[in-house]
Amino acid sequence: MKLTILNYILISHSGLFDSKYYLLTNPDIRHADIDPILHFIRNGWKEYRNPSPSFDLSYYLYSNPDVRQSGVNPLLHYIRYGKAEGRLPLPPKELTSPAIEKDVSGNNSFASVRYTLAPRKKTRKLNSVSVIIPTRNAGKLFEQTLKALAGQNYAGEIEIVIIDTESEDGTPALAQKFGAKVIPIKKSMFNHGLTRNQAVENSSGKILVFLSQDSVPGDEHFIQNITSAFADPLVAGSYARQLPRDNADIFTKRDLNAWLTGRTQPEVRWIADFDAYEQLSAMDKYFFCNFDDVASAMRRSVWQAIPYAMNDFGEDIEWSKDALEAGWKIAYVPDAFVIHSHNKNIRYEYSRNVLCHKKLYSLFGLCTIPTIGVALRSFMIGTKMNWAYARENIHTSSKMLDTFLKIPGLSFAGVWGQYQGARIAKKTVRSDRKSQE
Image (cartoon, rainbow, N blue to C red; front, top):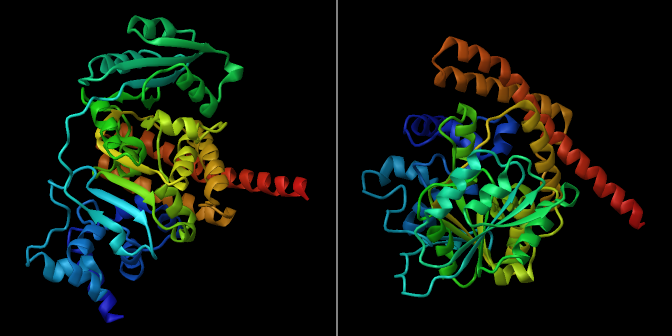
């Protein structure tokens, strides 16, 4: 007990443990109402949960075999000895994409994390690219997306294919002004998976880049960077980093920057051992299969073998799961980034969480809020945390009052949406089983 207290004090005063980051990146810990530092000391480091963006557990253990073999907490080792010895808490900058490759092998041993110097790029003919964008009343922001695509510094061919669902604001005409091919469809025919398939069938590029209508490429190298992952012939798809808009609210900025698409470190994932993959928890399997069509790319040849399934939501992560299970790799490329965010409102927060958690339960059996009791506890914890965050980050009384009043509703909408989404999915599963009996 005394040792745990001492370790707790060392970690809490090290500047290398960020409780907010730890809770945001580990929703299971947040919902369980567990002290984040205590969880990290007892279990978190063994589960490779990073304490903050400033310390990479996997890299520290990989680059220090003596620490790995000793079985000690790597963060505590760094605090006590490693820092003074000049050991690095993060990989050096020269480790670039595809610097970090993660597989599932053995029992998630640290040997499964491989850090390598990026290979020298060979001169090669660049693949033709088709940019696919589903639209409906895309609005003024869409022009920024089109301008950013028109300004790409990419030596290969780029075509833009818009599949538009009965827009009434001039979206098709605006797209055509920028030379895009426009495919009109009826609202009754829209489906997140099948609509994208239809657009691909009307495109010609060897690489397919998918964007949402309000995703704005962050610089002129977006196409070059997101397609760079395909230098590895086993990479089926890649996805980009998402940065919040300048006018995003404080919670949108916090949550997006802390999410998997907010990371600054490149990563390539594949399944090396299916037994180990099947043993992953539902949450870990979800994180492992993460993919996001807000800004993504895939090989046409892989799409031909694994097209999108019919989907009202979550076509991207289902495709990624199928591709990984078929033996392909998925790459995260933060050098490719888009500006994309939605400020939170109660209706959006609830409906999106319902759809998201229906999908996550059907794909992975993930249920983050299993009971009403957990929902109420999570609501109270989330509300208190967000109030504290607002106090630290809002400095005008009028905005503070407005935000404080919105927080309980937003917290409840998110938690209740997660609960209802999984609940609906469970009912569907039970109904399907009965119909098969």
